[in-house]
Image (cartoon, rainbow, N blue to C red; front, side, top):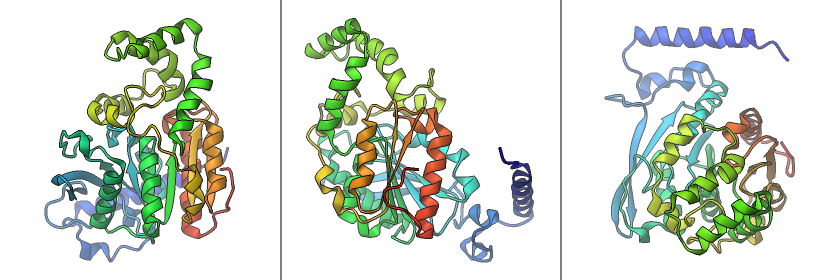
Length: 360
């Protein structure tokens, strides 16, 4: 293992110097930010906000067919060339399970932006199932992009799970605005996802457990506590997140899930799919994607690792990353692999050195 202590010490001293400087100076403004050399630790933490400082939270007004609503975003760090907008999964969870990114991206100078989609977390909830629509969410992301002034010189979109569907769909329509696309732990075909659950994952369960799950599903008795009582240890602990109990941000984010949004789009369980997304399939369209794409999956994922590896071979500039210890939440149960690969991809795209077809 390389000795990284001197690097850490240097970073600590630089951070300490920037904090001391901050204590003796008024709040940073856009004018003073321009005087900080780009690419330094100080520049990463430079704050372009003016007036009252609020932690770089920005509430973005969006226009929808049902009127105007507000969605919540929060910028972390400052990098004019790499800005990663995070799309949470669920559907209907919150940005909070992405909090582990704070332990990996800032020390590499990567800016990222938390974002709660409409109906999620800190954003407005119109409580109208007609609003839970993939095309409408694509337009929402585009409005957020415009409000945050992201463009092809810096805009990376990372979507996890349902967020991966949304990210891909956004790219099919608006890839001219993207610098890079990361599809994390999501297949590009919901029928194939359902087939993988039925023909592969289901057969890994004990026959008596699977029989009881199938009986409950046949009766549509999804509110029966026994249903989740069976899925938690026999499916979620194996394929959703293999750290039990789950890391606190995961528990917190999933505990706030919007059930109306989740059931409308996904169906009542992660064990297969039965909502609006049931027939969604973009595999034939993958060759249309010109933007660099990273497809991330886990060996123990709810999604088929072979399918997620295949995605990278179908797009024009694709890389794949299959985490050998990871499940659907590979950013937690195989963190080192996940973030090493993600950072490698982000830096390669920025440097123009992406090798199509590479497995990271």
